[in-house]
Figure 1: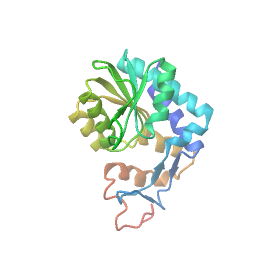
Figure 2 (figure 1 turned 180 degrees about the horizontal axis):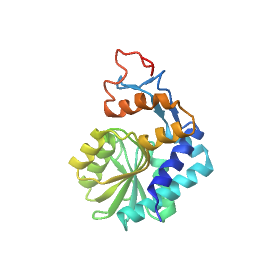
Figure 3 (figure 1 turned 135 degrees about the horizontal axis):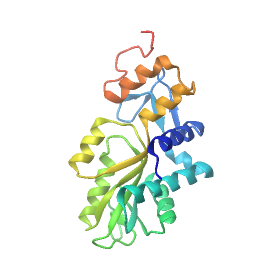
Figure 4 (figure 1 turned 60 degrees about the horizontal axis):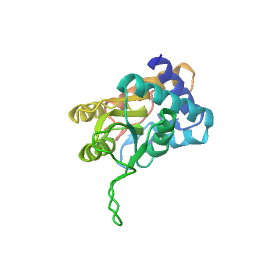
Length: 221
């Protein structure tokens, strides 16, 4: 049985353990967008850890079966969703395709790589959900190619309201194995972060574009 709460915490534990996720609430990272962030996430690191990789593969496959039912093909989103998608497709015994960020500028000019059969029911695999923009571009490309998108599955989400709004507008269901909320709960419970930092970390998710701009990032401030 797919127990979401247990899986959320276990995946959070793994991601922190292997340093795929780093939390620095008082020394934030700067994203390419210019946003200040207390979290850095690189789920590609999971691929270097067989135990973690296997757990994620199995739980993504299980969640897809229980949440989306029968599907015909798995699609990865380039680039980080490709290896995760291959692993899930292998676990489920399904064909695999992937969606490029943009069409090739030579040869066939393909945007989708692999054998595409119109009418197939597909689940899209991502490694990480922020606003959902790049993920939904892949969803639209698959729909344009005549596939029926059952939904999208990812390892982790930051839990931004904007992502929920974007997926709802695109009429695309999505699920993730773990979330920012579960992560900071686990980190506080196991003294990975100070409990006094919880408020600071919670505020970031609610207003990530403004968080940390022109303020002293200390819980005592």
